[in-house]
Image 1 (tube, helix red, strand yellow):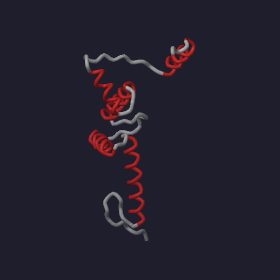
Image 2 (cartoon, helix red, strand yellow):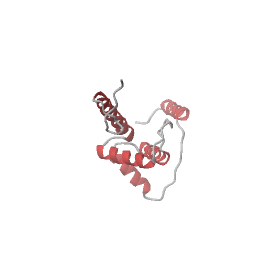
Image 3 (cartoon, one colour):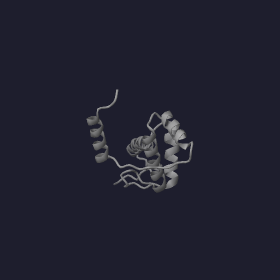
Image 4 (cartoon, helix red, strand yellow):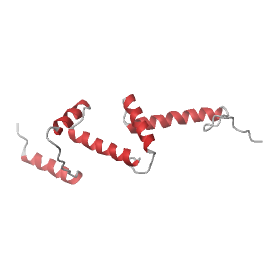
Length: 125
């Protein structure tokens, strides 16, 4: 059943007000590869391409979407590999890793151990 013209106009107006369009040109056959890969990730081709671009920016610059955290490229690569192995998105993996390490550090402090060096903390007089 065709979509009523009023509905289509509303959708088009929403897209115009909320999205930017980018047209890309790829060699013949690549579109099908992109679509097939996106399907294996349970996402649209558009979502896959957007995610791929965002991940490339994060990898290349060490910056998150917010742009306020910079990590060395080797750290980003290690996080990406570990996140992939864990089946998680990189931000989810990093958040979990930081939370886990913070708990370890708190336990170490409670035991009188310097979290950074592993040595005993000096007791204050």
